[in-house]
Length: 54
Image 1 (cartoon, rainbow, N blue to C red):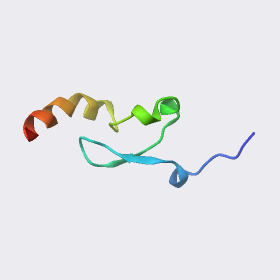
Image 2 (image 1 turned 90 degrees about the horizontal axis):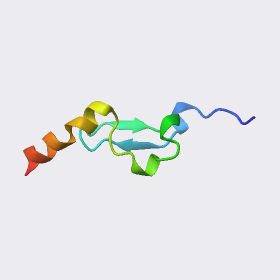
Image 3 (image 1 turned 90 degrees about the vertical axis):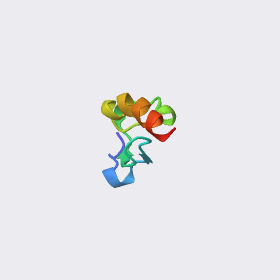
Image 4 (image 1 turned 135 degrees about the horizontal axis):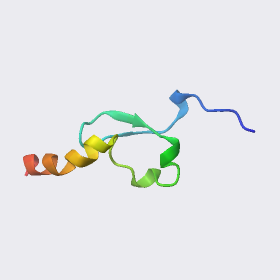
């Protein structure tokens, strides 16, 4: 069995809604390229952000 990675070694992205960095999670293993939001809350708020900026 391989060694576990430390949290600082995990890939990160910036949330499109709150502009905060978030790290890779095991549940995103198969869809990491498609992940855009750090949480369910930000995913729900995405339409509010778009309306405010238009």
